Image 1 (tube, rainbow, N blue to C red):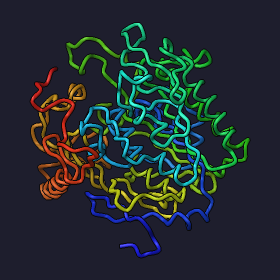
Image 2 (cartoon, rainbow, N blue to C red):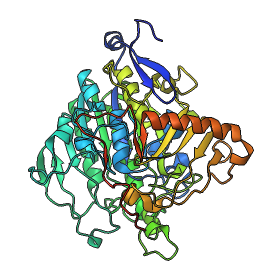
Image 3 (cartoon, rainbow, N blue to C red):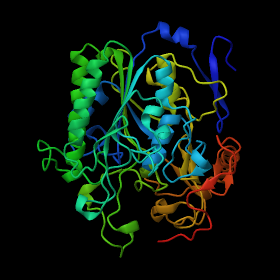
Image 4 (cartoon, rainbow, N blue to C red):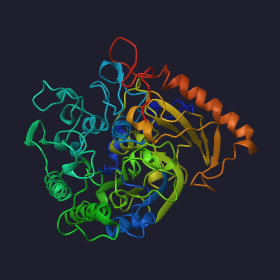
Amino acid sequence: MPTSSRLHPLVAIIALTFVSLPHAASAAAAPRPNIIVIFTDDQGYQDLGCFGSKTIKTPNLDRMAAGGLMLNGFYAQPVCGVSRAALMTGSYPIRVGEPGNLKRLHTVPHPKELTMAEVLKGAGYATALLGKWHLGKEDKSAPIGFDPATMPNAQGFDYFYGTPLFNGYNVFMADGPFRSPILRNSEVIVKAVENWDNITADYTREAIAYITAHREKPFFLYLAHNMPHIPLGASPAFKGKSAGGPYGDAVEEIDWSTGEILRTLRELGLDEQTLVIFTSDNGPWVETTHAMAPTGKAFIPRDHSGHAEPLRAWKMSAWEGGSRVPFIARWPGKIPAGGKSDDILTTMDLLPTFATLAGGTLPVSLRIDGLDASEFLLGKSTRSPRTEFLYYTGCLLTGIRQQQWKLVLPRPANPPGTGWWGRLIEEIKEPQLFDLTADPGETTNLAPRHPDIVASLSERLEAARNELGDIDRTGRGARFFEAGPRKLQVPLATAAKP
């Protein structure tokens, strides 16, 4: 275990590995980077040129990757809200405490949860969220329609400009009644967005203004794009221009936006002082018919969603395409250029990593699942500190990856308790084992050939159930800030609907 020269051991419960963060005073002696996280919505693993897209042109992100580090084994969570909760708290969402002890399909972190923004603000950083929050508790009695205690300004962000939820859940605005507001802090500045064509340019203008205004002190900017989630939008300079269709238009404008941010950093002399991360919240929303049923009602045209090839499946699924996403990290002079790795890392690992780089601290009593990957990102270590990833569909534990091996658990189709996620979860009758290095598309079940590996991973999964929980049990390490038992938003007794 680390000695007194290191502070705040964080226990990675499942791996039983101890890591620690440098003391804030000693870390502050080294240059502390500005931190920018660019987080897209429903962008698939393949949907960048540097990750293999043949139809979507992303020259700025390709250059960013060439000048930094690309990770091929980076994981988020398979749906928007839980993915953002994992990023902000450094924890599997099933561990995160929620208001009323209710485990929602879109996680709402309890106001007493510690967020990435609060950690960095405590280290002296200016903090801003531009874009989609999707971690607030709806409250019709509140002026903005959400409990203020669960909104960005109460969770560590000095400044917020964006949407409280998603931009919609239909392909076209006319397909449904949902209209999102746009907020500036706690003020509604647009009551109902009717067209999303200008949103990426809007956020880019806000980002440049924020960086410019805060160039004299360390800042944390979380740019959570609404695109390329449906309904799609792109400004006139990009609309109808991509070979990837409307989806490609949206991604190519995000690439332009990233280029404008990097240009601003260079012009302000901040390039070598700023760590920029680019990734996505989950895989692409591919649902050409409802629940992908052969005779289902037509839903999302194929040119309105992305690609996860060579991975299997898409958003909401328990396969690789649901939660493995593109990842690029760039910090000139600190992160070696041209780096690529197949090692595992996750959104949860960014919180302790940023805390180390910023000279921040985490409470000794806080048990999270993220690991400090600062030395890995900076090229001081050739291996990621993470060797495992647990696959959760809401509160349902569906599998585990350890190094190259992935074990997929048996499950029914449309599992009880998974709500609307369940429509894209098919039946698995027996345990399945895949070698993701040789078979990233999860095509060949190796369980019959490796019963020893199946047994070992099954034992690890049981430890995960005991610590974090499962759909039918509460883990001993789950956090609660209120009295009473855990409740599921969709009770297990509720009959699953196709």
